[in-house]
Amino acid sequence: MSIVTEELQQSDLRAVLQNINLGVLLLDSDCRVVFWNDFMVLNSGQDGADVVGQLLFDVCPELPRLWLQKKVDAVFALQNLAFTSWQQRPYLFSFSGSRPITGQAEAMYQNCTFSPVLDAEGSVKFVCLTIADATETATQHLQLERLNQLLQAEKDEQARLIRKLEDTQAQLLQSEKMAAIGQLAAGVAHEINNPVGYVYSNFSSLQGYVGDLFALIDAYQQAAQQQDAAFRAVLEEINRKLDYEFVREDMADLVKESRQGLERVKQIVQDLRDFSHIDSGDWQPADLHKGLDSTLNVIWNEIKFKAEVIKSYGELPMIECLGSQLNQVFMNLIVNAAHAIEKQGTIWLETGCQDDWAFVRVRDNGVGIAPQHVSRLFEPFFTTKPVGQGTGLGLSVSYSIVDKHHGRLEVASELGQGSTFTVWLPVRQPQPQPQGGGDSPVSER
Ligand SMILES: Nc1ncnc2c1ncn2[C@@H]1O[C@H](COP(=O)(O)OP(=O)(O)OP(=O)(O)O)[C@@H](O)[C@H]1O
Ligand SMILES: [Mg+2]
Image 1 (tube, rainbow, N blue to C red):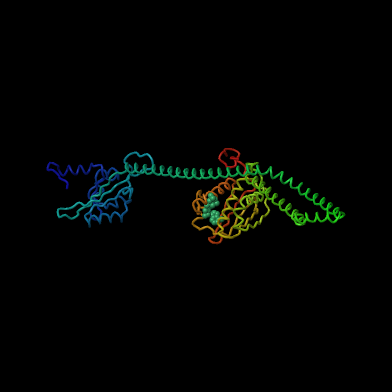
Image 2: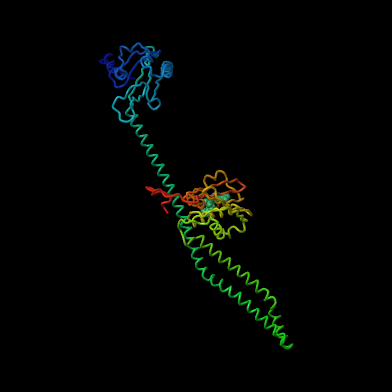
């Protein structure tokens, strides 16, 4: 409760009310103005003498009439304070800012209080409406908010960069792994290539010599027919003991099969070389079918017990690409397809060309992908495989390789039916930008 000492005159109080740095006005229950202090005069430009006795809404037509009347009614009915802050309603009266404000704030932000003024009987006589200029607080607050937003944006950007860093690290890890595998494959291929080469060539000679030896034996046997019975008996005994007829027949098969085996070893060595592309890590026109075939041979062991592979290759021109990197993509897609097959299934490899785009499609009739996983497939480290069986990098690395080729990697899948991954590649890479293209993928070449 406020105490008014005796020496303080009513006129003094009135002077205080007039001069206080707050808008003060008294309203009756109809919202007629009973008192209007200097702050109001100054800011509204309307003199107290003209305003007192008028309806507040006539004096200030900008006021929200219904809302304000409701507030005043509530104070009369409940004898309670009501309040509105600049945050809920920035401007009640359209006053201009009380100080030169830099920035956007041109109007005065206001905090308003509606308080009951009681008569001697304790009923509400007037409503005292005070208006505090909150422009400074509001401007600082808004400035802080803007700064906060900037900080938040910066934080988001940092989070994005960290994610990018993680992606890059994952890709680096995978490409290091692939480089190591590639190097190993290339080394092994190189080591095997030499001995296989001379064994293969010796084998051709051996095949010829065996033919010659048999011809010689035939001639001897013919000549033996002219000899006496004892000699022939000894010879027949040797023939029987050594099972000469069988050896003679089997020898041809052995030589033929061994030759086929050697050819297969030669092919594997060639595939390993193609796969790891020891000769070129450059952008070069490549035959994708060759890449697919050699990749398939390298991973054949992982697939042969699980799936039948059906190739349906279309016409493909030479594609400008990083051959060994695309082989990694094919490998990841085919191995994933094989892993998706639980017991026995089929993997379809389809290729073709539409306009200036080539496609390589790997389709399987495996378990399929749950719809909620589809959007996460290309995230690094996303895997549904048990710990130790999948790193979850295959698809994310494949995605970035295809992206580097300015291509697209599409996926379609139905749970329980199978999945289809399609690599789309432009036949020719876009030309580098003439200037300032330091960031373009082509300039990485
Ligand atoms: N053909 C497919 N059929 C069903 N699910 C698939 C297929 N291909 C990928 N997936 C799903 O996508 C996930 C991510 O594949 P990704 O190749 O990136 O990683 P991974 O195979 O789990 O591990 P790795 O790093 O060894 O390749 C897989 O764990 C699997 O759940
Ligand atoms: Mg994989």
